[in-house]
Length: 476
Image (cartoon, rainbow, N blue to C red; front, side, top):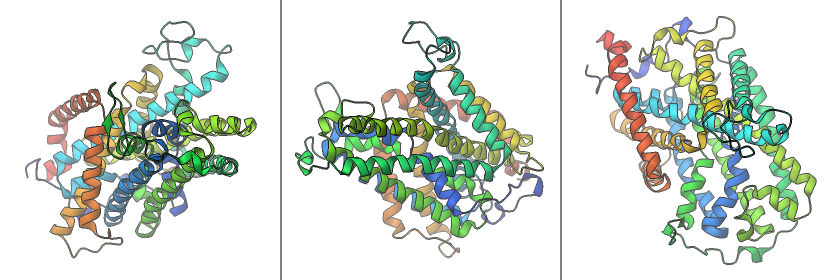
């Protein structure tokens, strides 16, 4: 078979030898917490203000629009993950439906989503922690050498907090999937409790007049003289990136006790919960304070509480933001290690990397390598310059999964589906169109170029190794 057309047989994907099969330890509460843990990070604590500056009070519509697009993607993931309950997420679905070459491109894109994303979050976590460490730890140990210490104006040596938190999460993942999921449950409970506290306090000062005018910049994305795009759609292109992460739930398919039931609950449940959380929090913030004020601060929720004279609650929210980040790192590293694990099992990267720990039941080798790579990025670079690459990878994965749903509806319409996307020929195209729009409009030109360069490197690696070492190539 040609590398363009060879596909993994759908019925054999879930049948793996014991040495390369993951241990089933997760149930739907773990999966919902995994999705919420990945989605609810710094985005809700910062993007409410950014979005308000671009759309005014109508940023609530931006959150709703993003929720609709991501919900469409979530429905598609639910159908594919229950049809193919194996690790690998979008990579595995693409391999079975669209072929090996496109699967490699999606797998490489997921490297951008998870590895670069987890490193960026680790750097963000370090920035919060650095405020408490200044004066106690040398500045050169708080910034990578690609970053300048704002106090001394000198380049740092290594971002030690970012490295340590990444390695700590990696060790937890090696210890066990269920243990990691349990810790994630606790972290998710803490940050959701903090957001509930914010809504309760802010809603007491709710003033409907703060929503007037509701659409100061209109619906469509229109550019200011300085080039800044404003409007509901412009804000949605930015806010969307606070929603991605739920797809990591599908990487846990092989480790789920009852995938037919638990995966659809985990994926759809986490997406619905986070959309509701985002809209409620944004409405509470905008109802308490004018949007023009919120737009000027990088920490809008903390600012609102301080303005309402709840300083202690503001400190709790700020602390919750720090607590929220390790759970995001955990889920992203988990997802990346599983993607790499399946690619190794398929022979596209050295198969020896797909070894399973005999007692822990986790892909210890691949998890360790993933953690070390992410730690190296986090400790060295100013990830903010390339963090949008993670968003580009996410959008490509969403499009691929939606396309897989449509292809399977044509190719095998009678195949048993534990969950079926309702109105699939509307839902999937909406996801494809929405993600394509956000990719083109929402991402900067430099991100498009970096994404192209990255895929050129990835395709080169594939032709140098994977195209011949693939298990399907050897079988054919």
